[in-house]
Image (cartoon, rainbow, N blue to C red; front, side, top):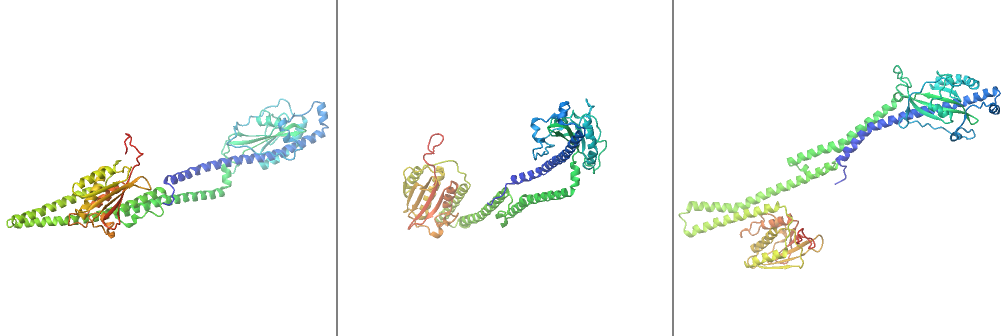
Length: 554
């Protein structure tokens, strides 16, 4: 049988595909949403770096205009900001050529913080240096916001807003986590819940239904100290809006998905639906006795359908053989019963019409014919019953000692005048067949020799263990009768075939022998000899090392 997938495998694959389609869609959308957030963070990083560089330049320029230097500020204890923490110094060291900041936010892995707290009044007012630098930055921030839509705030070294694209100018944002991190010299980004809008935004809005907002805080470092912070925030592109913008690609994806569904449907049709329909046609052919039911399906699709198709074909062949056997058997039974029944009927009519005209000798002769024909019919019935039992026999776990049985049967037939010689090898295996069935086989062979060879026939039986293969016993049964022609080597085992019909032969003896042997896993065949008849019989056996549960040899 060529390889075919199992039906449960096909169903499992189909179910997994159906299950994975929505899961894959959810996974892809989740990845896409995280990618939109990282894209927003990346844009804010770029904008923040430029704004920080511009503020640092403005701050240093104003500081120079005010005539302040690092030395004078240290002397007057006016050093602004705190030194960058050791773990962040390399990040802002101007001597390091490249130190890129990679976007890292992921909606699936990172916590979404509460909405940003409101700005608070500062404890100390910003100095003139930071205010002046912030005034220089304000026009730049407003121009940037028109294009990027990002909220930008610039704070001094205490977290007080000195430039902003929105409200909060002069207020302190030092209480925010990201600002605190930036004041220590660390870049910080996080997600916060977005405040709900009073009305639903239009489809063209970039925010649409986004529930989070990206916040980025970047320190402004000058001479190793944090002199300010640039805080940026923006709502990432909403996934619905992103899908709307890329709707043509998603329509193409939907077409591909539809094609996948169609392919899965075709696959199911080819592997399940069509083979099952073909299997139904095969079963209908079997029920109608058509020859098409005798052949398994060429394309079963799945292993179960292939096995079922082969079982149907085997069943159809068996039924066909059984039907042929029944027709032949019925014809042979009819023929076998016809002769004695015709004789019985003719004799009965003669007796009925001429009983008073017959002499006592004639009446006795006709009565003897009636009795012989009745006995012949009785033998036929008995043999037919034995053949039916042999062909439907389900052997039990029985064994027999062949030498003892052969010796017993031979002694009984010697008492009737038959010359029987038995030769058995030493340590012969016990055969896997019941004593009654084995005795029926031996007596049927002996009766066959007497019937065809007459009273002067001699019989020899040789038994020895099989040389090769599993444990077994080979038995050669031979007689000195007239023999069987090679052309009839198989015919002699066919029911009702006999060459001794005149002597009362029914043609069922050897058929019963073969049926009994076949039921027990044995075989019989005709051996070619120079004279007489010889049969080779193979019987399954058990090794003498095997014992039954009660400790006796089985």
